[in-house]
Length: 138
Image (tube, rainbow, N blue to C red; front, side, top):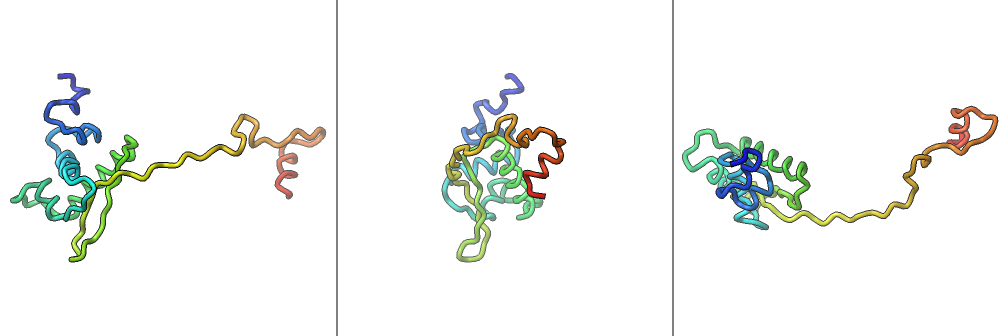
């Protein structure tokens, strides 16, 4: 298999391939667990068990949040249409969920962004620095 296409392997789920997770990593396990419960909040204890396993000694909320930050960086890096929301449930436990990102609105350009957009108009007889100062009013 081509090493640059490892994320297209048979074992990779669609969402793990979308995130670009390497196989058999903690980040892949987290993304798969959140993808199975898409648009639902999941308690961090359940995610710790899904990511680290039920008997892991290294499982903690802090280590889970480091993996979540890595997944959030992949969302930003690849400009994925997802967001990971962190909330507290009624019992006060921290929950995480994978949701679709809000659609970004495109703004119309109202100003000229050409090569002479920020340049001062040519005033004969004045140096360039004084032309710019006259525009600012100083």
